[in-house]
Length: 210
Image (cartoon, rainbow, N blue to C red):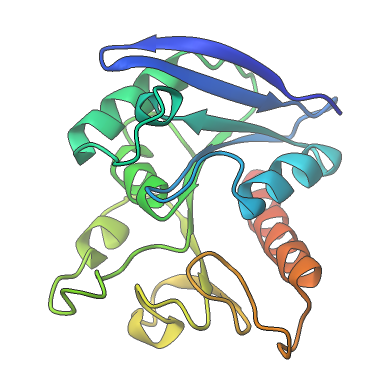
């Protein structure tokens, strides 16, 4: 499958929409990237490569600050506005799930309900900054107002699985850190880890629209 890329004008500069379409989509998943990387992060790339084969079209939203070559993400309001512009440029007839990794997961939580999504997928949700352990983003996660699925590494320094309340629908990725990297002696290899993430997301999204 071939990824198509198009430019989307936003109030904060041009964004890019990377699209991997399923031939017979049951659902579409729009994903925002994190503050420390772009749409080419290995987990987002794995989802874009594998999900279309499972009937899920994937849109990866590249924020204007990344397109412009900047290294620091702007404030949340700017990220949200650019995300909305990209979502408004998407045309699908199937149900839409909004998601993202880290900072992109926070934006998805804030926007999913207002953008007409049927669910939200939060990869490596940054529950609390390591430098400020008393700060929590849990209200963003619990306030989505839609079915929400969190995929979290067992060793995520922004919040491990035990830090989330029981009512959160959570998939734990063994030995993985915030970037879903695993050590050499992990239970699963790095490729198996990404495959597990893909499997978990496919099962959850399919259950929402099936």
